Length: 252
View (cartoon, one colour):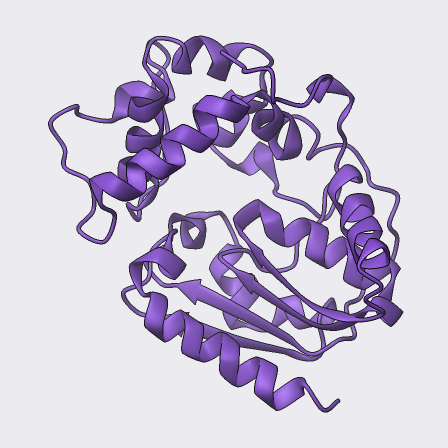
């Protein structure tokens, strides 16, 4: 399933791996401070760097994920159905067996079809996550066959195991951060049709401002038609929001 370009020891990766590599990249490029942009679980490394090294961060932009870090302040999996994809993929070997029934292109196709919906992805006791997709379902209109080919080639080269290890298989491990707070200017772009809005308590966490306990300088923009892939679905609008934020905060 994995190609030779996959990380040699994905089981050794932890939630701290990406934040450390991000800081190493900034050092390598001699960049003192930067704006950090993260999508989905890619938001977590941005949050962690902003909390632990605020002197390196000019601002934080995230798409699809409000403030969450691995451990007690992460996703409350005990409140979600046991067949939910995050729980299933956290189980070693389960996603590998599920994905292994298909070629890589079909797996990526199924993920795009499944995850652009507004409902949670919950498999029954006698089915796997890939079984939730009807093979006859077309791709969303904003995602072309050419896009699919590019993504499938990337995963054909890398395999899925590293992406399964981080975040799914280490998200419950305490990252050691206590009393976290992001003080940099921040922007959250959230699609109102994103299935994350259905996580227990998640909508109130954002709309009632509870998230600002951790990010006091946060602006939140809800996009009414946006789904999980809002940056691909509505690229011009998302780009404009990001550029406006960068221009506003570049002089701070």
